[in-house]
Amino acid sequence: MMPNRRLGLAHPCCIGLLFLLLLPSSVSVRESGHQSHAHLPSLKPHATLPLSRSRFSAKAQLDLTTHCNESCYHKGEDTDKEQLAFETLYADGSRTLTTVDLEENDSELHVRRPKVTTPRRKRLKRQIYGSDGRFNIRGDHFLLDYPFSTAVRISTGCTGVLVSRQHVLTAAHCVHDGKDYVKGARKLRVGFLIPPSVNGTKPGQAPMKKPLVRWVRVKRTRVPKGWIQGPQDVSMDFDYALLELRWPHRRPFMRLAVAPSSDSLAGKRIHFSGFDSDRPGELVYRFCPVEDESNDLIYQHCDARPGASGSGVYGRVWDDTLERWERKVIGIFSGHQWLEINGENRDYNVAVRFTPLKVAQICYWVHGNEVDCSQD
Image (cartoon, rainbow, N blue to C red):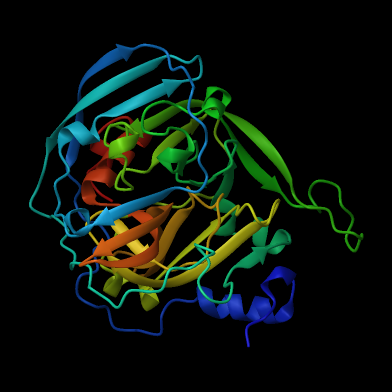
């Protein structure tokens, strides 16, 4: 019987269980297909064009749900440079569109096609599958420790993950609906949790205060053109955005990696921590096996609720240089998707899968040049 996850990780049972879950798989032999330092395509800016100021007319949507049929479920790698062009929103409301050129190499990552499985019955309460498998993260020993310390709040109601000293990845739909920026993106902020003992709560004090949040303004937001195509064409394939903070933070951050096949993840599992709306003020961690994958999406049944969108989805990937399993961000949690395959309906929670082209794009956003992005 699973422990009561609403007790948080202060419960001894939960601490022991989490320790075991965060350990790498017992597999000691490196499987073929591990790519710790895959060479990335080179993305170079072509032209930057000024755009009119955003109207900030869209409403934030914390529970993104899309529908997919066989054509999108089985589609191949068809990303082009137009989709990898990107829009930049500045703190003063001005915008630019940057077109790019690509220099690809032969190290394309191939993945198996999604399996056709028995459809699951429609659930009344989406995004929670069976018994709730989420853990509340509490206490300094967890909130300030890696990898939980890399999770941050987004002022529009979503979650983000630290990927550099000054950059945060989140879901594109948290700041843009495909047509315009959401109202809250005008003064977008990123929130860092400050545990009770750090914000003045004395040990043993009851009731225990919830963590405070220190908010930092965002000076620049970048969204791929693949997302900005109008609501009727929005899919989850490009549901990611990068936020640049006004000043650097001092916390550890997670590095990006091209998403390998699930067979090359320790335990074939993914993990992510977010700020689910049904547990306000709490950081919530979960893990689950990958059910299936396409070129652009990771299909899974990790329990999640609105607010978790934008969480950094990570797995343990074998690093040939360090000769050990390393946690790497391989995607961004997006939301829920209904699949209609051969007249059968299936439901999944979905994460955007980081392909070599997407990692090259995000890396360029972070470093501002293609030289530093030649290696993962």
